Amino acid sequence: MSHLVQILLPIYDNEGSKFASDVYGRVRSELTERFGGLTAYTRAPAEGLWGTGDTVKRDDIVVLEVMVPVLDRGWWNDYRQQLEQLFRQDQIVVRAQTYEAL
Image (cartoon, rainbow, N blue to C red; front, side, top):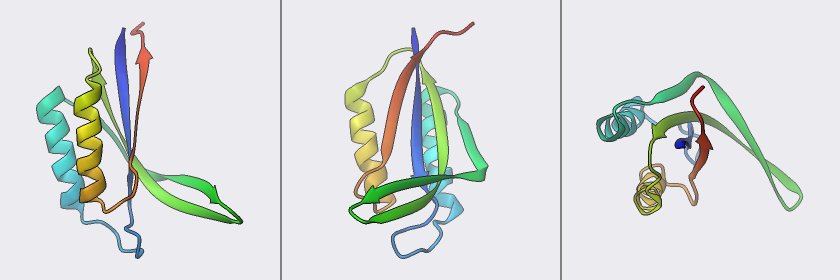
């Protein structure tokens, strides 16, 4: 079984300013170089909603996907931390699921 890794990246920083396109270009280049390709869902941003007490917060996000034959959890954990610094976020969601090619 292989794995599909998804990375959810914010479009705006915590002050509401849009991240520059070269920030995403850097991430795309890093992942493409390491894994040989990726899929980026950037045309229509996804909307993330979550509750914090009585408040519902909203994020517009782009999703990047990479298919990997082996899931290197240590590498992904380190990379997630790098993305959190790059995007100035408390948490970036990086999730993986197994898949079977049909």
